[in-house]
Amino acid sequence: MGEFELIRRHFQRAKSGPAVALGIGDDCALLTPSPGHQLAISSDMLVEGHHFFPDVDPQALGHKALAVNLSDLAAMGARPLGFTLALALPQADDGWLHAFSDGLLALADDHGCPLVGGDTTRGPLNLCITVFGEVTPGHALRRDAARAGDELWLSGRTGEARLALERLRGTAWALAAPNDEDLCRQRLERPAPRLALGQALAGVAHAALDLSDGLAGDLGHILTASGVGAEIDLAALPVAPALQPLADADRLECLLNGGDDYELLFTAPASARDHILRAGTASATPVQRIGCITAEAGLRLLGPDGRMRPMSARSYDHFA
Amino acid sequence: MGEFELIRRHFQRAKSGPAVALGIGDDCALLTPSPGHQLAISSDMLVEGHHFFPDVDPQALGHKALAVNLSDLAAMGARPLGFTLALALPQADDGWLHAFSDGLLALADDHGCPLVGGDTTRGPLNLCITVFGEVTPGHALRRDAARAGDELWLSGRTGEARLALERLRGTAWALAAPNDEDLCRQRLERPAPRLALGQALAGVAHAALDLSDGLAGDLGHILTASGVGAEIDLAALPVAPALQPLADADRLECLLNGGDDYELLFTAPASARDHILRAGTASATPVQRIGCITAEAGLRLLGPDGRMRPMSARSYDHFA
Image 1 (cartoon, one colour):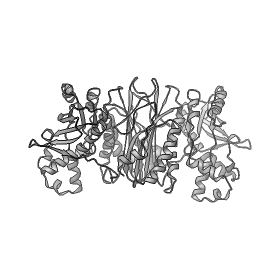
Image 2 (image 1 turned 120 degrees about the vertical axis):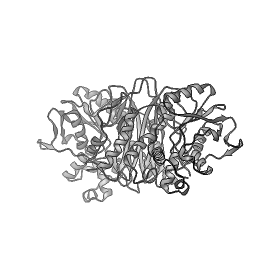
Image 3 (image 1 turned 90 degrees about the horizontal axis):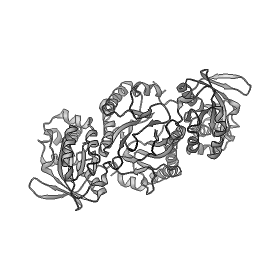
Image 4 (image 1 turned 30 degrees about the horizontal axis):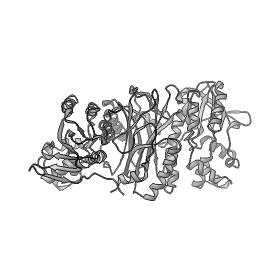
């Protein structure tokens, strides 16, 4: 199977998106965004042994590779237009490619985000997806737009992906607790990008981002970019059933420093509360107020004992 | 040096482009294309050991990684708006990154194509650049737009990059011929994307592509997509001084199957001849008529003996 046959067999589809003027097969793809819109662009690279295990289910990998990019569009409040895929493969394995493209393109179809081009080459397994969306100028949810007095909101809940990862790693505390393994694995391997919620928040919420490296560390990016601080009410954090049996410290680690959550963390004025609750209902996405933005810098946690404690924000760093 | 410090130190610049509403540092970059334009997108992945040697000059690598993508925009007739870079690195080597980003961003500055976002991670060395440009609807130079009767044009000349590559590989015929080594290495390692010419041809030429895998094979893509054939007049092909001493067969191999040329191959009606010559002059890019497009399928070569010979189009395939 040659390069062009590989692309034709696994990645080329008859159906496309309304914005796609020219898809796979030319020097460039051509997209026609809606008049008067800005283009939102995000790119993520996934490397075997770093972002996924060598024996990962290729269908789940296809899903996740696109999901983490769509999650960036969601965090901006953008509507997907299409994506490119660059793929380095050790060899052209037909079964692997079939499953991978199946997971990838099923999610693309779900969100009307067609594959419009890319590159395939030989090399150590590496996937780079770049995704394109559109947003009304001035409506994008930026990291630098949080204001003191904003309420802090979270979609869904955090920590299950981390628990699943720790179980795969064989970590004692994760293995000891009985838990809903399937659901946690699902959260780790098949995150659902919060696109409908993100679009409903565009122009309403102030700042937003998607949680990839952990709630506390990612919140730190909003605080730094916006020049503000925050308080998180620990009692307000949604806790998944799988996390209930954990010791307090392990549960907090999952909730606040979990990673791979792909939920939206956003800030909004109190006046937007009703709009946000309706957006959550309309997009079938749970939303929860978990704290507030403060003029005072730093991140503080309000414990169940009613005491406020400072917390140092940590975030995953590939080179630290 | 952590991930964010690495990005800040080597890739973040104060200056940006007029289309960039939001650059590096958020979930997405935001671009504002000119009203009424289409977006042209291309993505290329370069892998160590496949696309470049492990001891490559990192400054040249930075240049080439962006150049091959800009060349795709040129082949579409598009004007650059910006690009993303996803980079997997075995380690964060400050000297390497300094040289790499220097080569990369110097070319970006030359063409007003700012880095707007991307990703950095650990892994076997791999670079994926996705580039964005804009073009007037209906003016893009597509592969499927060649028509019987069109003239076939080439920018610059082909073969020097291949000669340089064969010398690096230690191939006897390449080492035997005296040649202008510096110029050939320059052609291999620092291709100049033909952006000004491509934009001047938009709306004038019919079909176009950029030569990455060799003239004959790449021309085959136009012929297949357009459902036409072509004749190449070998006597019309520009021959670089470095290729003159080669045996006929080796010279033809470089000219027709060279690869890494990053010249534009395009077709246009005879009525566009003056416009094309002026476009070449205005963009300081040599342009040469090298043949014609025919209704009869297949690729034929008109030899210096006046005889027409059929040629099987070959093209480099990463998986064949």
